[in-house]
Length: 615
Image 1: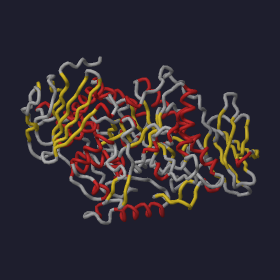
Image 2: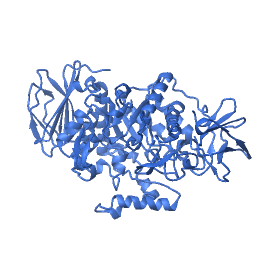
Image 3: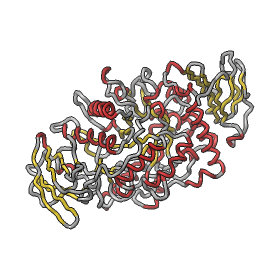
Image 4: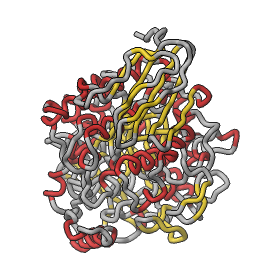
């Protein structure tokens, strides 16, 4: 059942709303200076519909529920021009002439994701302002941009996870046409678009869903309050609401992949989990549209059922994030041990994350005080997305410090090599490629004073144990938001320019070396030398082979990796003075079993000398 305001080409508009709690529903439609009320017709299972003639785009509307004198916006509104408390607006889905007819999507194996927050990515903070930056991202080696949530939220600044209208593109960012124009421009550049969507809760301000039906339940609790009801009585309406939302983004906006936020907070004990039903619907859309589209789940469950095919008992989601990779790398580089980092920090943890995706694969977690996770060894590595930084891991720190504020320049380069030479799908967080030093902090712009104060107190309680907790930025302050904007000029200065070029070199190697495009676990080896702090890895595909050495230790060391008779040619050395490093004596051509020195906090990559690079 398609929901919301569906504008038809002949000037009519069909309105559909799921309101099982109502005995009658009226549509209050306003066009220019005229307003009229239309009685809606009740359909099966709580749906109400009305098809109205002469309801042009830009008409606004509200629903009258039963005999209430209060009018409410459409939960499936496609545009909220006056904010979360105002009327909904009819949108012409055919207003934009697309120019991406030759675009048919991109396989997951080719994704190199660049996550950005629209409001802080550019000085303007709009979707349109991203377009001129796309060429620079493509030249860097990015193949997909990931947009943090765009659903309408209160005020004009927010991370996006407080959205209350999942179908509506936030007006301050540029609304529906702004997003469509960005997607069209991305496809013209050969870039895929990933959209972050939230199917585990509604934001706290402007959510009127309970007036319509049992969207929420108290049977389960999430970190944000009541859970969405995916398995109770009348839950087919909620399931349809979010399945239609996913299809809406894929169909109307030509989005290439959806990042499903925190699916561990989607509670469903049905025989067919909501995620499995969602995956089925998206698979059908993919077949019918002849486009490659993907679902990528964010989850802290380390549960491979999420990505296993349905025919072997899985949900059929295409890929999921591996937080273990980030945590193992971050703890190794920073030495931090608070919170979930207490489960990491040893070189063997990162070795396992590299080899097996999950460090915790039904292994005891001291942080969780229980066994956690499942074995992922039978899944191809392209089903896992990894990062050294993202909005969560940076922004959920009290001060929002990026890695560039926490570790040395050499460690930053090592982090880049560890991420981009890994056998997984890498994600970079905006500004990471040049070592942005501006923080990315948590910010909101709620209009309810009580809610604002609750957010402030909640953040204070979360970081009460921190030594400098009284320095926590005010999430409601515009200053906190402004401090989080990127400094685009930084990438052209000093070591920042060198670092960007280093990232570009790594991405070129990843793109052109067949061994780095191999996602079969059987075609890689990884080992570590705990005492020396050395991680060694080898990957191969046909005649292409690479040998990597990473030194996570704080001193230069000599190693003698076991190599075959073929000569190996040095392709990259992060300690090279070309990359503002201390210099290195590692040989340009490595002979069989030859010993060589590697600098502290550095990475060296060798290629088999017979390699013929792809064009």
